[in-house]
Length: 77
Image (tube, rainbow, N blue to C red; front, side):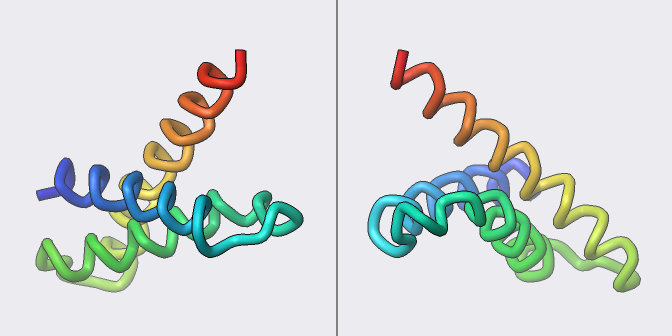
């Protein structure tokens, strides 16, 4: 389920970046990715505590943010 959450988080982060965030707020994209990660972790899994939810959300959101920034850097080269 977490792989699904990572894919959804990456896709929605890209959509928000393209259609929803002005360029001057682009630095907040990793934060948006983490929020999506926590949200999808909460929806797709059954965390037993708030600590587990936040940790798993970070583990989903941070790779999605890194994948997005790595892809962006590769495309601009």
